[in-house]
Length: 329
Image (cartoon, rainbow, N blue to C red; front, side, top):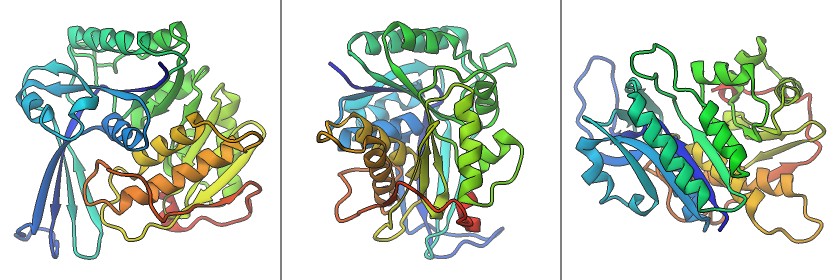
């Protein structure tokens, strides 16, 4: 059985408040409130499942929240690694104009035995599948008592052992560490700001984004899928660059859009296209459509498939196009 396994070493509970107006330092009463099990890999698996893919989400959660997790809509997808205490909470506050203010709790350290249990769960899920994808998604915790991030070496070794292609969506110190030796990573998904930091220069035009992505590809990455915010996204390989953009019916919540776009890209890559189809263009279009679909959801976790959303795709994009300020967010 083929499929896509996601790994979220720092699971979360997403709390979303909708308010009329948000003023710094002032009291506000929410008009609505939702709470759901999240973490980037969980969000990716939820979108993949909505798209009809076989997927499992390995996620580290605090024991205090496991019962809640097993009652949620994503429960059938979850392979929970239980650790003591409560799960961190990431909070989104969305005002009447649709602006999202997001505060993520710090990532707690992970005990060595919990990381070993996570690796064991990953081994079992990959062993159940042939020709799988492995998606490493979200923040990476420190290994307790070491002051360093958990080591992805055993994760990458398991992927090689089971013939899994690897996608990584992370940021900060974890992305910096990965970029030192990204050889063997099939798909990397930075946003424009992260890509700019990776190459040490500002990226103002689409051509500069492509050039920066190709520097990462030259280090051993198969494809860079760069999110450009309001400008769309671009998929870059050693010899191709495909741009795609889709408009959302409305903007309800921008949290989780990148996760849905990654899921859409993988759905496009792993579907059975007609003979002669441009798979990279199909995947880029699917990514843009799923991202637009996600921002029209009030929750972080998406449900259903994009309906009535169609991406504009350029297989020969205008490299002189200047990115808007929102494209860097």
